[in-house]
Amino acid sequence: MAEQDDWLLIGLDEKMARRQGLPPKLPVPKGEFEGLAEKGLSIDNARKWIKDFLANSEPGKSGVWRKQNSNVVSSLEAFIDKAPLWEKSQKAFAENDYEKALSALKRITTMDPEDHAAKLNLASAQANQRDFQAALKNFKAIRKTFEGDPDFHVALGHVHLAMEDRDAALDEMVLALEAKPDHQAALDAMVQMRVLAPIYENPRDANSLLYVRADSVGEYLKGQWDAEPRDAGFYVEQIVYHERELRHGVVLDAAERAIAAAAKAENPDSTQIERAELARISALRALGRVPEALAAAEDYAGRAPRSAGAQVELAKALSAAGRGDDARAAIDRALEVDPGDLEALTIRFLPEDTNDLQKMHAAFPALQAFVDAHADSAGAWRSRARAELAIGREDDALAHFAKAVSLAPERDELRAEYWGELGKQQRYQEILDDAAKITDMKKRDWKLRWNEAEAYLGLEKKAEARACFSALNFDDALHVDVRKRAKRAVTAMDEQGATPELPAAGESGPAAG
Image (cartoon, rainbow, N blue to C red):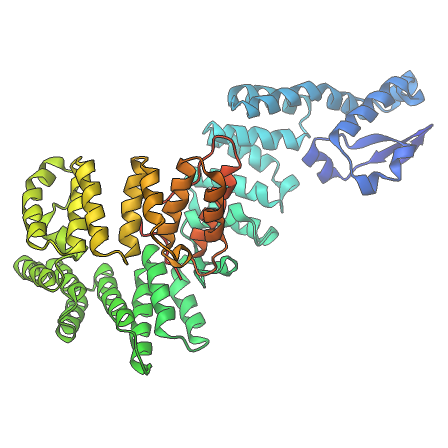
């Protein structure tokens, strides 16, 4: 550190100077030096001090001093000369004009090859332009300067990923996490690469989110589940959550544990038992273990002759085994047990591709005849309403959804689907009129409550909508994803022109607690 009249010429840490594009030596007014450690060094102050030093200080005005310290002077002048180009590049980035940004950054790096901040920005701009070879070259040139910076490693990792060098990309993400174990961008990238899987140990607790090796999720959860006794209800909740994430092996384990737990309970819940048995069969089939799925389905259908779901799962297993006629017979038995079973009705009457309007129109008369023959079944009317929506008969569909609700007013998921379709038609007042008939809304299904909030919002009743979304956000009995979505909805209401992220009509969504 050299003293020059009222100035101190301080040497900066080489890596820090390159990271920020600063000159290796910087003039600092003596009066500012004491507070530098506390306040930090800003680029704006550095420019101001350099201009003042070169224009007004005795050394800066001295030709002798300038000649003796030509390298210092050159670096200081280059730093000042870069300022307009930096402003130009940042404005171009803000306007997504990467060509203009690239041009400015290339000029900066030519003027000052030691400005690694400019090279970092240049590499990022080249990556955005999909010039991955050039980006990789610049990233490698500044690696020693930025090594240990998690953002640098993630940016470089994404370039490797774009160039289909998975191993190199993974190495960079690992380095990012070593530098900052909770670095979200690195975690997200490793999820994208299917190296890690995000899981909630407790689907109702946001703080239970963790990242596990994707090939070890089942092993990890097994250890957690073995740690203490669990009841069937716990495992059914896990079934619902992991089915949504398509973790069939985890679902199978949870289902078998739920069945075992129920067998030990004094008063087992028959609904939980059925849910677990059906999940077990479905998971076996999804894992390609068709003979085992078929054996399990036949066994459970024999033990539960009044379960339509057992017959549906048996039909799916029979179909997977190539026994189409037997599968059709199982579906018929399911509809004898429950004429309103939605899966059975879909399999029995509708084409596999429900977007094929010609086939849907051809299939509709048979479904209509079945519904007319079972007019007291809410599920049958619901299935008909869904088919009518698919073929463009919206008014008939809404009328028949209402009919289904009148037959089963206690079924929240049915009413929620009806309200969702009313919402699509912007018939918000009808939703609120129906909601007024419900006296315990706070205890009802989250999808029903969400549609009520959406109706208030659609009618510009923002205070009521906010109250509904907030109630969902603070309901710790709900899946954490539902609560997060509700929080985002409240935030969106505060942003002009924004609308909350709404669930699709009929969406089953995450499991409620």
